[in-house]
Structure formats: structure tokens, C-alpha cells
Image (tube, rainbow over all chains, first blue to last red; front, side, top):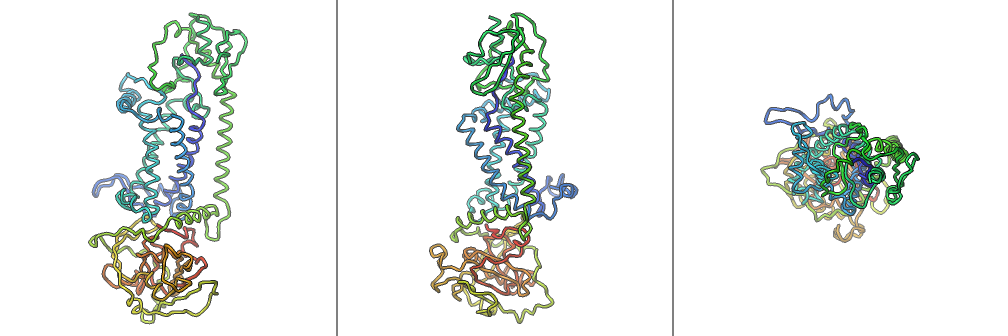
Length: 236
Length: 339
């Protein structure tokens, strides 16, 4: 059966799309800040696989010598980013949407099955609700990462007034390191997310804008959307 | 809901408004039981992660007959008929995106302050400063470290540290008090030598120097508490009574300005940060007298600020109620820069 179904509530759609440019601005301004002490890398000992970031990358994005500007944008948009994120969490809790998002004990196995299925390594596709196991894990993780960014950010923003927090995170330098890698995490999430959205197609993407999607399902009892009811009615 | 279940006037377009969503779904093609509908183009309708609203729903086996009657065509129709709704969402989205982009353009191009960042960003710095100062307490101390972790930090700034026209032997610390609306350009009220500063209780601490660039270094400092200096010479209170930052803030002069002897580098501090118990007039680092590059003969160390505020080679200190200029704030940085 195919029918139209409400998929994403209005609030989720707005908060999702508002978060998108906010996160971009936070990452961009963070990059302007990071440039002036760009010490992180992927590597072991003397071997460096990848340095964050190559000069060509900075040049291409006009990053150098914009620390003051980066900090100014970062400490302005941090409020919008934080408030938007808090509203999202509040909404999911109050509306009950969290039930679709928070993983349960089956989610990990389901996530592995879904991933294998999508990589065409397995024909088995586990049944799912609004989100599959992989999505639940990813979407919940990215929200926790958001909380992590706020906390590690506060720890390096006010390391004396919130010295307990900074200490909890391993000290000032570790907090900065964590703040950086969480950002790399967002970028990886973003790449996979966009690839999945492209792969999932128009119907899925449109649902995040309009709220409804065409879905293959049996309508729950008592709720018979138009298309479905028509066929049933005639069938009877 | 009932409307939707109305029998159909087969050939007539019928819309079924959904009370909840306001969406419309329409059916306008005849459906006959058992009729085989062409399969819906899966690429179009496929949802990678198809959804059902009930989380524990285990999609019941669809009746084979219904499967056959399932009309992909109807679905296509419904999809087409939701276009107004869909279009509205996209238009609202596009308008919101445009508005966001406009706001961004406005922000980027809004007239810069004299100090080179757009004024809304400067206001944000000031808003953050008010919050931070409201929360600030001199009883919250910067973490201290074991001495073996301490190293000399890199010498990052040399602004105001010209060697040619500086004679260390003739150096004096000039101290000015401008509180209560006193005018500028008055004679220094105090002229102190390093020996004078060294008569104040000597304090050692091993704390982290945090550069605004993002690096940090544990450093072993020694010097006199700025608060002891201010108390001894009665520089920070209007009444002349002992300092009490936490309880008698109104009695305090509001700011401290520090500058190099040539006036090229200058720093502004809120009074509570200057009077923080770990803020030092520092004359030794790593157990050695200051080197010229680190600000000999006397520098400041403020643990509750980025390193830009820990001015080297202090020439003049001014206690004032006017918010002092600050070298890096004049170049787009946060004036407060507080931790």
C-alpha cells in the first residue's frame, strides 16, 4: 500500500533547517579560530597521515589572519546554535518524538543489518518504524555531540569560572581537542547524511520540507487516509 | 476522516481535506477490485527508510488482492494533488532561506565599529561580557599545577618592547588614579621602583597561560599580587577602606589601564579581574628574573584573561572609571577576553 503520511512535525522541520546554516557558521568561524593554532593531525609518532589543515585548504577558504572575526562570529552564533538545539531537544521530549529517535537495545543490530543491506552485502532489511536503527543511532549521537560541543566550548571559553567542567573534560587542552574532533564528527555526519538523502530520493527529502511522505504501509486501524480508503472502499 | 471514506464519484475529482494536517489528497480515477495497476515507478516513490508512524508496528501481511488493487496511479494522483500544499512549504522554505541570507548579508556589511568588526558582533561581545561579569567571582581560582610541568612560554608579542629607547635602569612604574571623574593628563601620583614592588608579599604560582591564539603553557610565576599593590597604595577604593571585591563593588574604581613605557601597547581590565587573587605584578618566570622579551622588569599576569591582557614591561598603571582603550580590542578582539 502506498499512501501519504505525516512524517516530520513542523517544529522538527524548522529546527532542522535553522540548525543547518547555524552549524555551518559555527564550523566556519571555528575554522577561522582554529587556524591560529592548527596543531591537530591524524597520525602516529612522526608519521602524519593528514594535517588539519593544509595551507591550500586555508587559502581556498580565505581563512588566514581572521581570528578576531572568527571569535566574534563564534560567540554571537553560539547562542542561536545553543537555543535552537535546546528547543529541538525540548520539542522531541514534550511531543514524544524522542521515541522514534532514541535507540533501544535492538537498534545496534538493526543498524548493522541496515548498513549491510545498503552496502548490498545483505538482502535482509529489518523492519523499522519512522527511523531505522542506523538513523536512530546517528540522529541521537549527533544531538549528543551538539551537547558535547556546548560543554567543551564552555570549558575553553570560561576555563576558570567553569574550571570544574574543564577539569572534568581533562583540562583546557583536552577540551579544545575534544571540541575540534566533535566538529570533524559533524562534517563526517554531514557527508554521510547528505549522501543518504540523495540516495533516498525526492520523496524522503521533500518530507523534511513539506512534512508528508508517500509511504508503503498498511494504515493503522481507525486512521484511513484518502488514497487508502478509496481502494479499500471499492474493494469491498 | 469520514469525508475521506465517502464513496467516490469516480470520475469526479474529489478532495479530502485532512483536518489535522490540512493536506489534501485526491482521487480521481476509477478503481475496480482486482484491477491490476501498473507498478509505481519505484525510483520515484521509494523511501530508503520507509516510515510508519507506529514504532512497534510490524507491518501486517498485505492482502494479496489489495496488493493488486493498490493503485500506483492513485498515489501519483495524490502526490500531484498535494502540490499546492507542497508548493506552499517550498515557498515558505525559500522565503525563509532568503530572509536568512539577507540577515547574513546585513550582518556582514553592517557598519564596523571603529575597531573593525560589525557592530552587532561587538554588541554580542558586550552582552557576553555583562553575563560573564555577573557570574564572575574572585573566589574561583585558576587551576594550579605541579611545578615540574612548568616551562617558559614562547615569546609571542613584542609590541611596545623596543629595545633602543628603553633604559632599564631608569625604569619607574608610574601610577595614576583618575577615579571619580578626575581628568586625564595629571601628573603621576606615584612613581615606584622594582624594589618598591618587591617589598610587597612575594607570591608564587604555577598556572596556565592561555593565548588567544589557542595554545597554552603551564608557567611558574612569581611577583606581587595586584590586589596587594592596590591595597597598599590605596588605589582601587573610593573610600580608602580595605578592598572587598565581592561585597563592596560600588566602592571600587571600575577599571585599570596598563601601558608600556612608550604607550604603544596598552591593556584595559575590569577591576575585579585586576584584583583577582592570582593576578600578579610579575617579576620572575621559571624562577628567573624576567628577560626583556618576557617583559622585564615588570609584567602583568592575569589568569582570568587571555594572554593578550598580560602586558609585558608595564610603564604606567591608571585606575579609572572610564573604560580604557585596549590594543587588541581596537583591532577587533573582545575587550573583556575573560576566563
